[in-house]
Image (cartoon, rainbow, N blue to C red; front, top):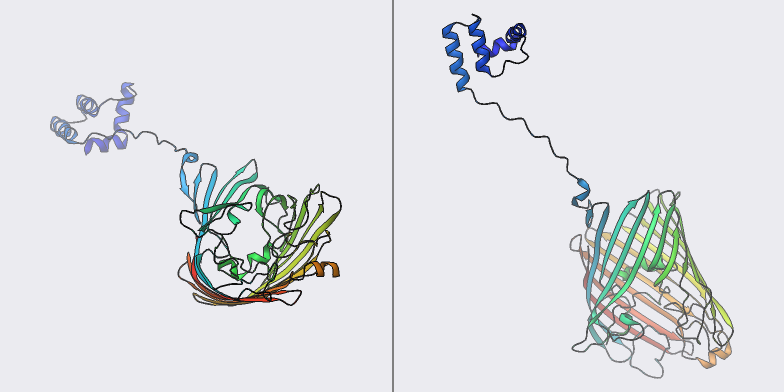
Length: 460
């Protein structure tokens, strides 16, 4: 348009400057002034007025953008299943499993009685049950406040089998009857705080340090292992507990873990003192102490994980006297290509066997010694994994008096496991397993059982 060209060239501004007016107002008024000053002819003025009337009105100025408060957004986490809500991250993880387990046991007799043995005796049994792991649902709420990473952690472990409620809660034997219910084993309730340069402090109920790497690297953790009570199944099987290591357990604790330095990391904790499951009544004034040292390194093509853990606790009898339970556990895991190998060994005094403080002393309160080991190999090709392991745990009499008083006390529990796994997808794994369990007493009694487990486990 001619008048727009004139304005763009500065002529209109010049005219307005002459008149002393800062702004001409509407375009119609500007055209009239140009016409009155003789700059525009009558025909040009009429034509430009017509063009100006047909031109669209200028768009209104956009309103200033509103800046959103992102602290009130709810977003998904980059990995896993979780939400970021304001300053906190809430994550959910869990597992569900189930197995059909058939156990062929030796006939019960005077020659198959083994006190503390892991092999079942009696008739053959079948069950649909959990494996070594019950199901679990974990909730973790974490945030960074004032430069510190802090978190609250909860772990609920429900089984699929009905529980016979008693002193051990959901960990009692099972109750395979109508109208019974499964139990929830609330194993984890703890808080954490720390930072990269400081390490981390854990306060609450969580997995122990002593023997934890032994069970966490055991292939039966995903499956059944030795069934334990199969006629009336409880929340879990035995796995390799009692035939290669003493169960670490979940315990109240205050534990400090250092930052990892050149592959080395150390943890030390003060734990709730435990009373014996089998010896005389105790009142314990001193806490239990556990510690663990781990080392991770890649040596050429080998991924190496080493660990060393220890435990100590003084036990005081109500009637007088005391003993100290203590143990040492060590192991190594090496992965090269499709192969992974694990080897562990432990030694203890006053800890007993299978679980902490079971058969830990004789009738006079003297501490018994124990030890054990397991070896394991795994081969993975595509979605298929083949695994095999063998392990044993040993418990010794204190002296001839103990031997005479407890002739059927278990001397050796052992098991051999063969396992095949198929990874259906990233969540679901199908598992088949054969388990041979053997229990031998100090007097020569022996019991054996052979079990087959078929099922699957899901993690998310």
